[in-house]
Amino acid sequence: MTDRHWSDDDLLDRLYGIGPGDGHLEQCPECQSRWNRLSTRRSELLRPPEVSSSDLAAQRRNIYRRLDRPARSAAVRFAPILAVFAMLLVAFFLWRPGSAPQAPPPAPQISDAQLFSEVSSMAQSSEPQAAEPIHALFESN
Ligand SMILES: [Zn+2]
Image (cartoon, rainbow, N blue to C red; front, side, top):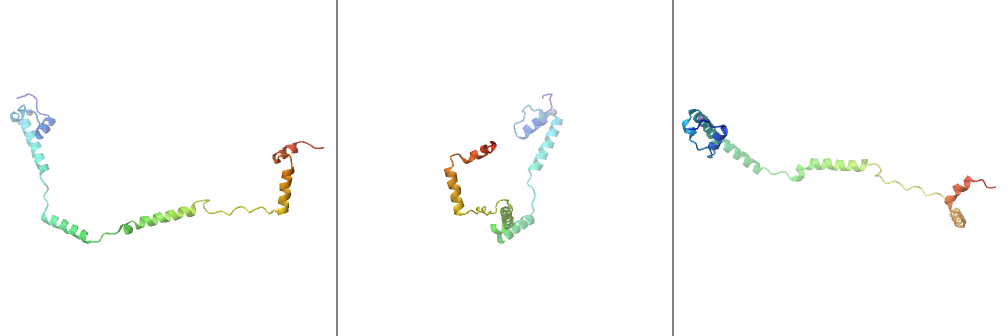
């Protein structure tokens, strides 16, 4: 007999069939009582739960009742979600700023003769139009 009592890990190893084989358990009454408590508790936990036949019958009736009931179609099930999504989509397109088509800016009212005279004056000028502000800086006599 060894002088060391078995630890909880030793008892668990014995429970799964890999415990120490030093024979301490058969000779030590303290470890023997711990082993008996552990093995009794394990057998209690491994016992299958008791289920009455009336519970099983009620469960079976519920299953058959659900099988007989027609299933709701996916369209009916998701209709509220689709309705909310459609409303959000419509609200997004109505609310979005700048999404409304804008009228093009009105064309300047100018006659054909006036347009022709402006174009011909631009073509006859030797200086580019961008030089006009520079001429304004100097006094011409
Ligand atoms: Zn012991």
